[in-house]
Image (cartoon, rainbow, N blue to C red; front, top):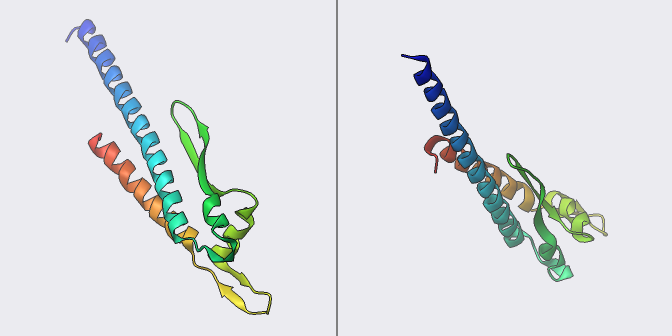
Length: 130
C-alpha cells in the first residue's frame, strides 16, 4: 500500500467515527429529553392529591440544567413552595397527633424506572445506531 492510500484510509475512518459519534450524541440527548418528560408524567400520575388540591402534583417539573455539543443534563424537581413536601410524601413523616404517615415512594419508584429506561435506550443506540 502506498502512503497516499493510508492517509486516505485514515481520513475516511476519522470522518466515519466523527459522524457516528455525532449521531449517537444527538440520539442520547433526545433520549434524555424523552425520559425526563416520561419521569415527570409518571411522578405526577403517582403523586397523591390530598387536601392541597393538587398543588404538589402541579409543581412537579423538569428542566435542562446544562447542555453543550456533547452533553445534556436534565433535572427533575418540585417547584417552590411545594418542594418541601417531596421528601415527606416519598419517605413518610410524623403526623400532628404523633402517628406516622407512611410514604408512597412515588419518586424513588419512578426514578428507578427512568434510570433503567435510559440505560436500555442508550445501549440500543450505541449498539444499533438507531
